Image (cartoon, rainbow, N blue to C red):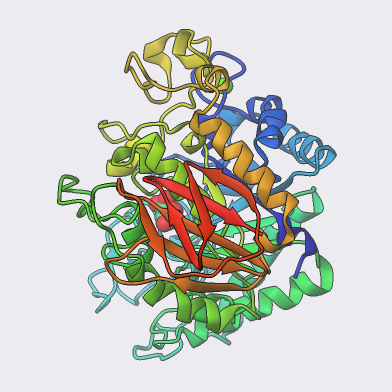
Length: 516
Ligand code: GLC
Ligand code: CA
């Protein structure tokens, strides 16, 4: 386990929308470099940058055309290497986004694979034997290539699935995982990883990490075997490199060799119940029962029922992480006020594992209702330009407003880093204070034990312990008490007001208390 993860706090950057330094309306590597001091000052010491490789951008770069070349719109490979160096100077580690399950249909491998004549890449993707042959149970496309065959998709139509083989081969066109051409796919992906690690990258967030082997079993034995093989390579050659899975099932991913996995927002799951319990993305106006919504009477046991077995079952293997949001998820500001967000973040930043802060969430950027951009659909509204100042384009770009990658939040009261710097109790200052607290207290970092101390369905506060530190949170508008004896402890941090006396912890409305 890379030691730096223990006190890591990640900042996720959607590079398109972070900071534009040449006025073309799109964020760039130089922009990230210029903002490294801001990120460091926030308390984040690691980055996850969404795909920044050459791409036709039909899925915002998750359709990779060349794994080893950056997209010119962000700069050059040398600019990215310089970004690694500048980040390292400040003690910041950098993860790139690895997309191992599919490429763009414009990737050179795919062009070769679609040729009628057999070649080295014929089996790099998954093809049937005939142009009218269906692929039962999988999405597929025919009629696009010279080769008389249909091919499998991994996500959108622009993303053909790479061929890591089938755990259970049911048709003659399905190759077993140990077929040399399937092993070649795995080795090609390791080669991509080595390429970036050799240039100073510190690891990868792995896109759709669960999706590699087809006809896999329930516990993803095939896909997990591949990740165990990748982890062996990392342990031997790059022991300080870290990988985090987009998976959401730590009992599989962490045991398969990932250092980290995220809680992902899925309708009705535990993570969803914290901040986004208001229905599906296509109908965002359902009743809101989120735990951190002040008047929703949320129930923390809905989170814990799912979280605890996963945490208990994997704490020896790696980190099951909490995110504020990501580029696929509605921003938490959509339904929560800044006061509610302070409590939600206080919880996320004091939990075990490694927290991830999505750019702009530190100032409570809104989720905008926008037409789709680069395959974003409902996700587009969570990908708008970072709001730095009160000036033109919120300080994101000197370009013309209509040339920007996405419009900047037009609201007169849209938050910015500048406006929140000036406000003493802004969300931004609270995020800084919380991250400073986490860095100061080992018991609040990745490893210290977590236990629920008072977590009753329908009751507040929620009280939990990290190592020797006791924490209580009350998202509601009422004063509440819990029968928890905190004698001899002193307060080291608070939002709102609370106290511990007479074998009780009392919290006023919308408060958070840390006792040591
Ligand atoms: C992951 C990414 C998402 C992308 C998809 C296909 O879920 O987070 O943005 O569209 O994979 O690569
Ligand atoms: Ca630019």
